[in-house]
Amino acid sequence: MSGTDFPAGLPEVQRRRHTSRRPAGSASGTLSTPTDRWNGIFMAFECGALGRSGDKTALESLTALLAHLVAEDADVSHGAISEGDGWAAGRIRISRPGEPVLEQYLQVSVRGEIVDSYLEDAREVLSDAQTQGRDLMVTMILSGPTDPISHDRIMAYALSEWQGIPWDETSGFSDPASEEPGATSDIACGRL
Image 1 (tube, one colour):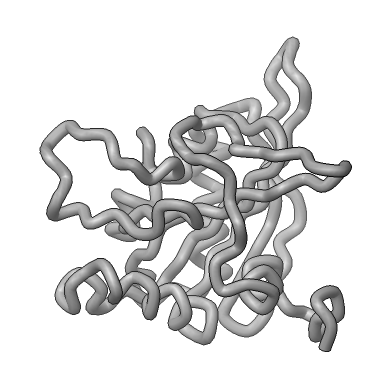
Image 2: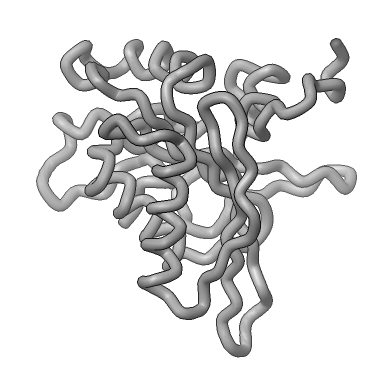
């Protein structure tokens, strides 16, 4: 299998994991997408949170997140949802007056190979108690301009509804126990 031939139905996050254990990322530290251009190639930045599904499926979890985003912001909509074995994905569309229309890819995975792979990485940094019961992962793949308001709402939802632990492909996982109250995490995706 070459780097561009993937099994049919393989979600974007899993395709990225097949090509590289830790895809090369850009410098973190901003809410706009850390995007690089080199010889016409865009670099995508991947981030999200590892959480608890509460026995909901990936489709149920993503549907609830999308409903929350649409209810919170009249400028946000979403398209069709794709789903596969243990994952559901879609794009949100942000159309604010006077600003360019933006789209952002979201994927929720529950149990299975994708979550297990990230749990393995998390266990290198976090204690067993912190990773215990975590069976959900929300992933955002950011490329080009992003909407910090929607981004923050996604992360706030993941942290409150799924007891999420933020991560990004550059900084890895953030240990919430080591954060001082009110401190801002180094995880670019976890800035609220």
